[in-house]
Length: 141
Figure (cartoon, helix red, strand yellow):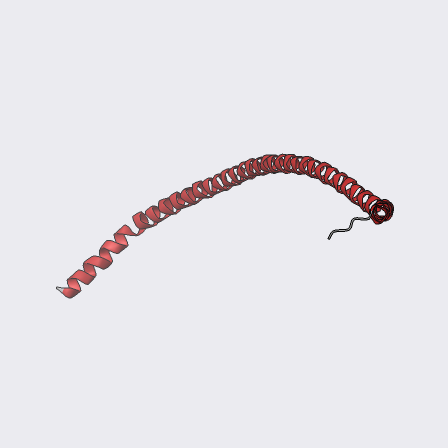
């Protein structure tokens, strides 16, 4: 039936052990070493990514602060420029109003002088006008 030979079994066990030792030396150790080095590289890269992410966040915060400062500075400059423009506009309007007021007073004084002149002319010519009017009315009637 079943014939078990102790010698064949020992030889097979020896071959199996030698095969395991050789596989361990040539295959498993290099493969495990490669996997460990790859894991170490991945770990290192993850740390670098984490550091870069933290650094990027710091830069983003710094950029946000710079932008905020720039916006507030721009608003201050805009406010100052707006106030200066308003002051300049008010002074220009006041200047023009005063010029117009001077011109208006001059015009009214000239108008008053013309009025006085016309009144004198009408008074001087009133008798002549009355005569001309009475002659015309006589001619119509």
